[in-house]
Length: 94
Image (cartoon, rainbow, N blue to C red; front, side):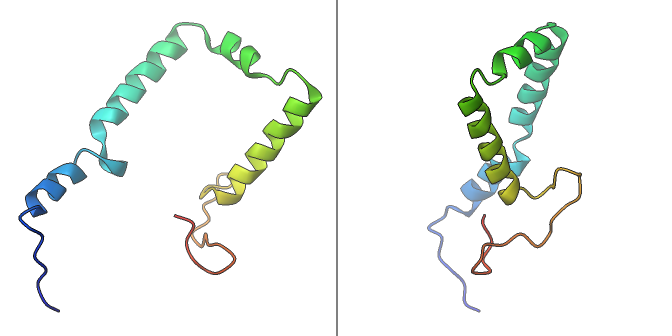
């Protein structure tokens, strides 16, 4: 295998890998702090009530959206992990 000229961007890409994607530790810390503050604020129950469907049609749309998301989810509703996720053509959806 030959070497590939990256135009001197290898160090930039390695640095970016520590900042973006699944390894974005700062974003994870920010999310965790914000989530903790929200839970401690006592506003969770009201937010859950506000998120409830207002009409039968909205409830149906929400169920359909959840079902569509679960088709693409790596973790099944029972907590099991689907390691063999693929589209009909055998390619990975990600």
